[in-house]
Every structure is written in C-alpha cells, then in structure tokens.
Amino acid sequence: AQKVTQAQTEISVVEKEDVTLDCVYETRDTTYYLFWYKQPPSGELVFLIRRNSFDEQNEISGRYSWNFQKSTSSFNFTITASQVVDSAVYFCALSEAENTDKLIFGTGTRLQVFP
Amino acid sequence: DTAVSQTPKYLVTQMGNDKSIKCEQNLGHDTMYWYKQDSKKFLKIMFSYNNKELIINETVPNRFSPKSPDKAHLNLHINSLELGDSAVYFCASSQGRTSGGWSTDTQYFGPGTRLTVL
Image 1 (spheres, rainbow over the protein chains, first blue to last red):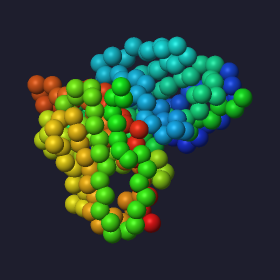
Image 2: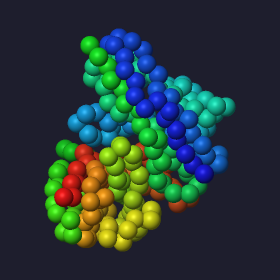
Image 3: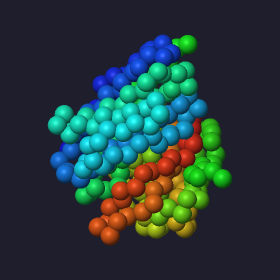
Image 4: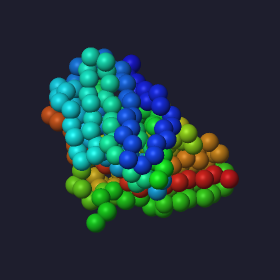
C-alpha cells in the first residue's frame, strides 16, 4: 500500500538557520513520482518540485534542495538560511504511475521561522 | 491570468442546504481534480476527471457530485450538507494522461474554498 510519512509535525527555527523536512514513502510500484508542496498561511498550495523514481539526482533551487534516496525511501527537503517567508506547512506527496493519478499526501510539517 | 481558479473562496451555509463550488483552469490541461483538506490539514483526493470523464471516485458520499461541462471546468455540487463537510476544498489540474493511461504531470492547485457548515 502507498503511504507518505512526515514524522515532524512542527519545526521552529530562527531566521538564517538551515532546516530539513523529512519525508518517507512506501510504494510497491517501481515507477512513481514524489512531490513537495508549500501551503503558506494564505492557504494556497504551491508546487515546489517533482521527482521520478528513476532520477535520484539531488536537486538545488536557490535556498531549496532535495535529497532523494531510494535505499531509505526518503525524499527530504532542506531550506538553507531560512527566512520568515518560508513559514508554511510543507507537504510531501506520492503518485504511483501504474494505478491512478491521485496524489497521496503526507500529513504535512508546519515550519515556523522566527526573526 | 490565474491558472486554476475557484469560486467562492468562502462559503458559509446551514446544515441540509445544497451548495456548489466552481473550478476553472486556463492551462489547457485535460485532467482536473477535487481534494478535501480537513481541519487537521490532511489532504485527500475526492475525484478526478479526464476530458470530462470520471476517472477517480474515492468513496465519497453520493451527496457529492462532480460535474464537468468541458475540460476546463470541474464543479462540485454538495447536497444535504452536514457538519462534517466543513473543510477546505481544492481543485487542481494536470496536463493529461500518457498513452499508457496514467498521468505523470504535476498537479496545480486552485486557491481553495473554505466551506463552513453551521
């Protein structure tokens, strides 16, 4: 069965600290996709990244980086030099290619960045 | 130039009423979705449509009826509203399906509709 676990319910950091949000997934499919979405206090869901199961290269986009490790079924997200504007709930999600196109979300991690 | 839009943004209504939420996307996508986010922020898919055809129906009560008049619109009608229907409802869209029949594309979400049933 497919499942996404975000064990960290809430993380608080002070501005300029680095922070890593953990995501562990379960799937029986060999082809799947992993996503991160950001939900700021205004409520919308903002797409951040998508990775497919065949591409384990880490990705960096500005202060954001993602570490995909199939060996540990993890897709962790690191924010470097965090800023107050990074305060949001971050969701990791999984979609399995063979079944449906539904996104299975983790329960989210609330990140609070204090000035 | 909003990509995925929903109306209304807020909806407050009494138990037992019928209400609709509208969704439109101008991305040219073929597949549209409805998700429900509960009070604990948990997001779960309800329905998906591809080119006006129902693809996913995730054991949602039949009081919820999606309607897709064309591939750019997916509306959600809810009959006999109950207290437990209070949530934020998100519409999303993605580009489409591969020849193998499944969608690999990123889903882009609308701003959400906060439904409160009193």
